[in-house]
Image 1 (spheres, helix red, strand yellow):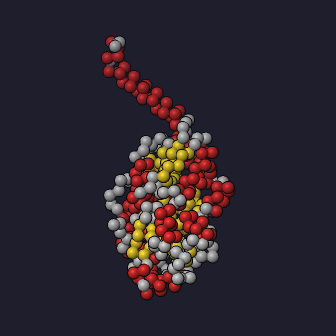
Image 2: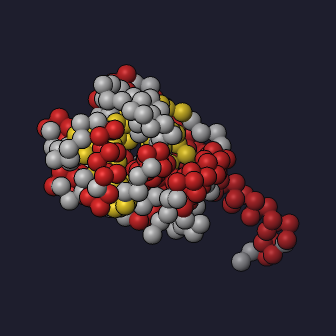
Image 3: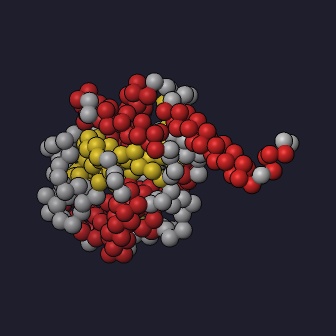
Length: 330
C-alpha cells in the first residue's frame, strides 16, 4: 500500500469519494429502472378480485414500464402469506403487491401479531379503486329478497351459515355486520379465497356468501348464484338494480374492498417516482377505467402522501367495528 494512504485525512477523503461514486451509481441505476421483468403478487387464489385486478392492470403497467409484469398468486392466511412475502422482498421496485383493505387494515384490526407490518412495511404506489361486496345465495335458497332470507334464517337457523373468502377479510367483516344488523347468528365459514368459496356456494355446500361483485359477475349471468343485495352504502354500477342492504331495510352495513398497489418499504426515490408515474398514467386512461368498470371495479386512483398514517387510522376504525360486531379470527 502506498504510504500516503496511511494518512487519516487521505483515508477520509478516499472514503468520501467512494461513497459519492456509489451514490451517483445508485442514482443512475435507479433512473434506468426497470431493466428486467417485475413480479406483481396477488395474495388470493386465481379468480379473486385482487387477482382479476392484477391481471387487468398488469398488461397496462407493462406497457408503461417497458418490461413484462408477471402475476404471481400467493394465497393463504387471509392474504398474510403474500403480504409478508412482498414486505420482506428487496425494496428495488421489482416485487409489488396488489391487495385490499383485508391485508392492510382488517387483518391488523383482528390480529395484534402479523408476519408483516401493514403501516411500516410498505411504500404505497397508489390507491386504484374499490369493489362492492354482495349478499349471494345458492339458487335453491327460497328467498326472493333480503327480507325473505332473514325470515328463513330466523325460522331455521341450523340451515343457514355464511361463507367468506377468508378470516379477517372484507367479506368476513360484511357478513358479521350483516348478522349484527339483522339480528341473525349465522355461523361464519372462512375459505382460502373467492374461487373455492364460489365453488361451494354453487354446489350448495353453503347457502349464503359475501363476495365481491367481480367474482360473482359471471356466475350471476349464468344463473348459478343469485344476488339479493350489496353490502355498500351505494349501489354498485355493475348491479344498478340490486338494492343495498340498508335499502332492503337493514341499515348499518357498509363494507367495500378498496385496493392499493404497494412495494416493500425503502424504495429508492427515483424508482418510487417511476412506479407512481406509470400507475397515475394508466389509471388516467379512459380505456383502463372502462375495463375496470366492466370487471366490476369502481376506479378511484389517488396517491398516498402518508401511508402509515392512513393505515393506522383505518385500523382503529376497523377495531371498533370488530369489537361491536364480535368479529374474531379463530
